[in-house]
Amino acid sequence: MPALTIARTTQPKPRVADPDLGFGQVFTDHMLVMDYTQGSGWQDGRIEPYGPLTLDPATLVLHYGQAVFEGFKAFRSSTGEVVLFRPRDHIARLNASGARLCIPALDEPFVLEALKRLVHLDADWVPRTFGCALYVRPLILATDPDLVVRPSRRYRFLTILSPVGAYYREGFRPVRILVSDRYVRAVRGGLGAAKTPANYAASLLAAEEAKAAGFTQVLWLDGTERTFVEEVGTMNIFFRLGDELVTPPLEGTILPGITRDCVIRLASHWGLKVSERRISIPEVIEAHARGNLLEVFGSGTAAVISPVSELVFRGKSLSIAQGRVGDWTQRLFDTLTGIQYGKMEDPFGWTVPVSP
Ligand SMILES: Cc1ncc(COP(=O)(O)O)c(C=O)c1O
Image (cartoon, rainbow, N blue to C red; front, side):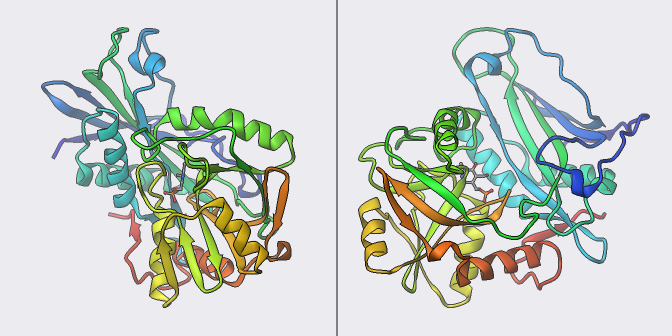
């Protein structure tokens, strides 16, 4: 296993009070860094004071976007213990994204240990308020300083930490969603299943236009027929049709969300019928017309569960659950956050303590 060195900061930063935290605005005192060189592999793992990078203007990632990243959270329980939520799955997904982008794989057990050390070192930055958390952002950048279009021979792996505020300060806020048949996020055979910057760049214009029209986010449809539902903003999506919980299958165009997996496993555990299957917009409209579209929600690390109150497609509005939060939506949110904050049992072993 590669070595890990630690250089502590001599200038700790001032803290921000939990109620003043937003998302990804404030960063802790330290970061994790490791470098890859072809022939030598990943080396020189180190925790060092958080600070800017110096990059040659020709650095490959700046031109051709060869990069992948992750996002997950550390939580503080009522007993003060700090845990990471499903870190192994996020590190594995980082490598899976990397494989699609020709980025060499990291040693997953080493990265887990290094991340635990990093979060433990900055543990005082983990917020104490329910709903707040420490967001963990690993990323890998292609660092060859030249303009040739080919996989880089050098990479830098970084992880930065950011205390983040409560997503729902005043309780659940169901959102209005615009179904986009103008723009698509990903196509089969493309990058949709990888967590790579290009997918987020591809989503910006549609999201801006939706916001200007009064919506919170865009519901993405498939890139070929623009009929089948894929994702909502940067979340996976679930529909409760009668007694069936439906979510689109993992066919390469959507991110295999870790929260999506939690929802599927919890709902199955409770004996609910869960289907990973294609679901078209005409099916959603028809279910709504029959009164069978009972709940719609997004799932993702940031919001955990995000209830949808309205879908608008080509000017037609589908109101869901009269704008209220459905039973299944509420139960999933309460259980997931209960496990994350140590208020409920963790039967699946999703939380990993950072203490040595
Ligand atoms: C495009 C996209 N889909 C889905 C998700 C949800 O994934 P997870 O539950 O792993 O956060 C995210 C967030 O990471 C995302 O960016």
